[in-house]
Amino acid sequence: MTFIPIALEGCFIIEPRIFNDGRGYFFESYNAKTFNEGVGAEIVFVQDNQSFSTRGVLRGLHFQKGEYAQSKLVRVTRGAVLDIAIDLRKKSATFGQTFSIELSEQNNRQLFIPRGFGHGFIVLSDEAVFQYKCDNYYHKASEGGVHYADPDLDINWGMPFNELLVSDKDKELPFLKDAPDFGF
Amino acid sequence: MTFIPIALEGCFIIEPRIFNDGRGYFFESYNAKTFNEGVGAEIVFVQDNQSFSTRGVLRGLHFQKGEYAQSKLVRVTRGAVLDIAIDLRKKSATFGQTFSIELSEQNNRQLFIPRGFGHGFIVLSDEAVFQYKCDNYYHKASEGGVHYADPDLDINWGMPFNELLVSDKDKELPFLKDAPDFGF
Ligand SMILES: Cc1cn([C@H]2C[C@H](O)[C@@H](COP(=O)(O)OP(=O)(O)O[C@H]3O[C@@H](C)[C@H](O)[C@@H](O)[C@H]3O)O2)c(=O)[nH]c1=O
Ligand SMILES: Cc1cn([C@H]2C[C@H](O)[C@@H](COP(=O)(O)OP(=O)(O)O[C@H]3O[C@@H](C)[C@H](O)[C@@H](O)[C@H]3O)O2)c(=O)[nH]c1=O
Image 1 (cartoon, rainbow over the protein chains, first blue to last red):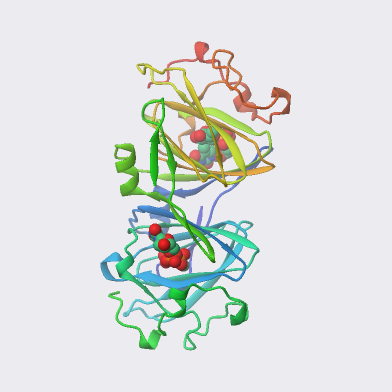
Image 2: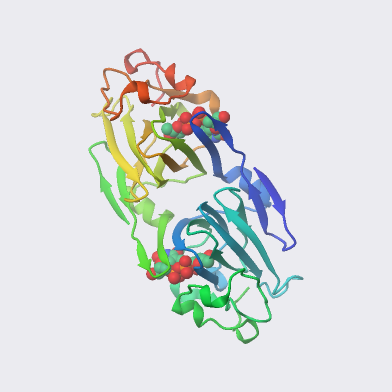
């Protein structure tokens, strides 16, 4: 497994080591020891999630506030998505900056996003299966988010806004400048 | 999440709770708290694995011996497999007995197999992506297995043996009656 740090401190691109043979392939998608060494932190994941979405579905930008904040280890096992992380750590030198990466069943890449970030993705393929691990449980009352079309963020989602499929909840998220404190 | 005990003590079929909406679906494929309550044990998973296989590939029956024994939480995210667990716990009332279940991307079922079991599966679809969590790390030197065609086990793999694709390592596994002690 290879851990590649990116400009947003604490985030890593992770590439698994894949073993191919006549039957197909095998890889360790997660190994607690290797992972903690790779990211230089002691992360204890407590929840795994799976979502399925069709082309143009955009989920994000989401986080849980304060003590319910979640680190996430995200990947795609069918199709492809453009994945986005946004740094919302008040004291971070890169506050408000975003990072985007294509995650797909072809590249088997993973992105690790620590607590204090917002996260979202848009589906680039006809169907996508998205999977992620979280180090804090789901807590509905602590959900927060930033609007995907916030002009200050100027994220290139690669698709005209009228072709996107977004939940009603996500359509009502605030822009970053109007957002309350997240406790990060 | 629903936890359904089966005849082999300690094994459970697990059915997730799926939320559908206009975008697709969402479900928690694993939740540490719910899981430990459901199976009545404190399991700490340390490794996640993913394998891809084509139709007729049979992987099994595998385990790690003694202190390297692994509990496994297994599921399928593409295609379908026939999954098999075999009780190898010397003192178990069901020693040598097998349990089989179809796991597929359609039924999203999971099987929990505690330490002391052998495990294997055969791919029923053109392609299958198999995913599992383990509560003990991979340790090559401690690998053990039982031959899939052991006449005493009489497993119905649902496919003629000449259509199976099996690794050289698995072809050389012993029958249960000839197998050494596994330390379970
Ligand atoms: C996130 C989550 C949702 N649910 C339920 C609540 C809803 O009925 C249903 C769908 O929830 P939604 O919040 O609309 O799903 P979503 O897919 O839009 O939300 C996700 O988006 C990702 C971009 C983020 O990284 C995730 O942290 C999460 O916010 O699933 C859980 O039971 N557990 C969970 O952990
Ligand atoms: C199982 C495993 C294999 N590997 C490597 C070793 C090999 O080069 C390659 C393929 O290993 P194999 O043992 O041939 O894969 P396999 O898919 O035949 O083995 C698996 O079969 C399942 C039925 C069992 O439940 C698993 O516990 C495991 O035994 O992957 C790891 O790096 N980590 C692991 O945890």
